Length: 595
Ligand code: AGP
Image (cartoon, rainbow, N blue to C red):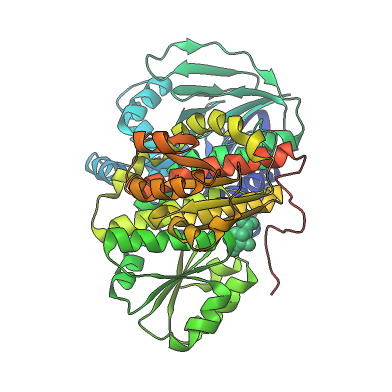
């Protein structure tokens, strides 16, 4: 996820420190390059490069930059490698416009060819530059700035927000389409940023921007226009009175609930990233040719490895060994050698058990890849290549959005390895939104009765088995109740003995597994137990289960991913009803750097 920030003031002044601080506040989004531009009269000062904020700021002395207007951008590479030329902001052909974007322009390749054919000077491969040229081309044709942005909006496909300015003017322009954008109004300045928390140290007077709105930022006011017809939009600013922490929670009571609801958007982000990533094909080529493939992780990340192994087997016919990192060392390390591939999965990228497995595997010649959320973590620095989870900060100790993006990534890779069109997965974010909306009231309704128990089982089969394990882990982690996840067919081989009147057993039923799950349900209900099914609407389940939590219709693998969302919600509601804090469960830590 990139981040943009722009500021317009009433006179030339030192803007460098403001831009560097704003960039620092956006680093949580993940980035590999940093840039800043200031505009003053007829001059643009542009400094940028690949690297961390502090490195680039020191190397290019960003703190000394002055101007009446300024833009900063943190770039996470999708189009074009991380490099000085691909870093943002970008100039137009003759250097009188400068702009930067956040998001993905999916027709970037075609647009660059058009711009070059039209004689525009294209310097980079980056889609942020295409936003600048898209405006430039329409300004060159004689349109005013707002109309040029409207026409650029018609040319630029994808989700993005950008900010742009021209020499010899007093204002900056910005537009929002799909990516976040918030405006701030202060004494003698206005500003715009990818998110609200990054504006709050500057001002608490803000304007929330909707998709399809063009913003003109002046030193003392802001104007909004509709991208549809250019008509002005009236909107009163609002004052943010909440604490920074409450703002960071996005209006939710806890980070966990916010992060559960972040899942559709971060799934969108990771799918965009994967579609543009140059690292995907080489990783798949190595996997296809590998002697053995291992997916290695701990806790929730291990459950994602299990799901990935199911998808690779079912969709691509590729056998994968999913294994807990410590067991990998004791069980498989002696067999590991060149020709083997391991994907090491860790949200934090710092889990010691995972790093302990990585080093000897590399020494034995295994090609080691990483899947991590925290950019700059040890895992991302020590693997041959790594893919980001694109989740932004995950603050709550129970992993939610990082788990689902691990699963989405594995599903995407399995589709690609199978030669299937991964655009079939583009419906995932919307299906997740529908699942949350559909499941929340159903889950809330069963919470009090389930919460009366301190022992539960959560059963799945095939692609839903890893989700049963993950649901059980979430329940254990924050409700402190005992919940065991297992394959549904194993329940009759022992645990069935635990069933008494009303004993709750959660069954996740994939669309292809309903008959088998119905057998399991009946084994529980005929002994007086309560069988709660999580599944697509199905008359066979409705006729047999005690309760059913309905999720939307989707193909089996996608359906398995959706099924974990009601379990996250159930654990959250049970935890809060028990009076516990879901974000900081007792005895646990977000990053486990110990043996
Ligand atoms: C998940 O809710 C837990 N916090 C825990 O199981 C976690 O997934 C595990 O410790 C591994 O962490 P990692 O993904 O950062 O490596």
